[in-house]
Amino acid sequence: MKMNISKYNKVFMMGSALMLAAVGLTSCNNDWTEEQYFQYVSFKAPLDTEGSSVGVTTVYIPFTRVNEDGTPIYGEGLSSYNLPMIVSGSTDNARDIIAHVAHSDTLDILNIERFSINRPEIWYKDMSEYASYPESIKIPKGENIGLLPIMMDFRTIDLSDRYVLPLTVVENQSDGCFRNPRKNYATAMLRILPYTDFSGVFQATNMKFYIISGGVVDNEPGAMTTVQTYAVDQNTVFFYAGTFDESSQLRKDFKIFARFTPNKVGGTSGTVELFTDNEQLNFSQNGLASYTIIEQEDEVQSYIVRRTLIVSDVNYTFDDYRTAPGSVITYNVTGNMTMERKLNTQMPEEDQIVFE
Image 1 (tube, one colour):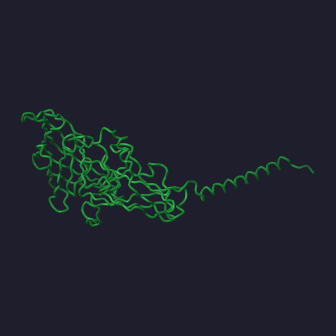
Image 2: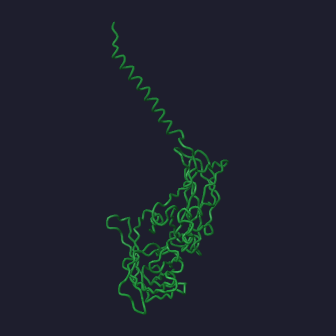
Image 3: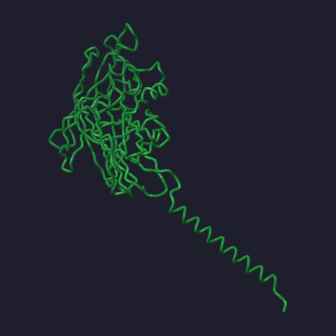
C-alpha cells in the first residue's frame, strides 16, 4: 500500500501551525495578565507647550469654592484642587500604596532656563505660602489613581506676581511608593489661577488709546487687541493700563482695578468702577462704565451655553512715567471690551476655563 506523502505533510503542517497558534495565544494571554511595566507613582500634570506658561501646568480653579446653592464651602477667597496621582503599569495596582508628596526645589532652575538669570522680575514665584496639602495619601490596592487635596487661600495673593506651586513625589519603598524616574512625571509645577465671572481675557479690538499732549488729544489712536483681568475678590479684578501686560517688567506700577457692582442681587448687569492704588499714575475714570452678562443656549447643541460679558463705555486716562525716564506720557483709553465663555453644561466649569 502506497503512503500519500503529500497528504501526510499537509496534515503535519496543519498540526504544527495549530500548536504554534496555541502557544502564541497563551503568550498573548500572559501579556494581559502579567505586569509589563514597573508600577511607579507620578502626577497627572502635563506641561503647557504653548502660550505664556510653557514649562509649567496651568490650572484654573474658582476663586471661591461654593456649594450648589452658591454659598462658600470654606469662605470667600478659599478654594481647593484635587491633583491626580497615578500608578503606572499595564495592570491594576497590586498593593496598598502610601504616596508621599513634598515641596520641590526645582523652581529656581526652571526660572533660569525659561527666562534667563537676567529677568528675575518675570520669574515665577513659589506659591507654597498660599497652599496646604497632606504629606501623603493612600492609593488602595486595585485603584490606579489617588487625589491629593490642595487647599488654596487667595484672600491676600497679588497675581501681578506669577505664582507656581512646585511639588514632587517622594520615594518610600516601605510604603510601596516608587517614584517615577522621569522628572516631568514625578514633579508637578502648577500655575494655579483663580477665576471669577469677571476674570479672563477680554477681546479689546474696540478699545483705542490716544496720546494727550498739552491737553490736546492726538486724533491718531493706537489699537489694542486683548485685555487680561485677574481676580482680586468675587466682584473685583485688576488689569494693566493701556497695552502693558504680564510680560512687562514695569507691570506692577500700572495696575488698574475694576469693581463690578450689580444693579440688584444676582443681577446680570451693573456698573464698573475703575481705580488704582498708585498715585503716580495720575489715574482718572472719565464716566462710569457698565457691564452686561448675556447667556444664550447654542442653536445646535442645547447643552452648550454661551456666556458673554460686555463692558461698555470704558474711558480712563493715566500717566506713563516709567517707560521713558525723565518724561511723562499721558494716555486716554476708551471703548468696549467683550469676554465670551462657551460652556458645556455637562462638564465642570473649571475644566473649560482658559485665559489664553
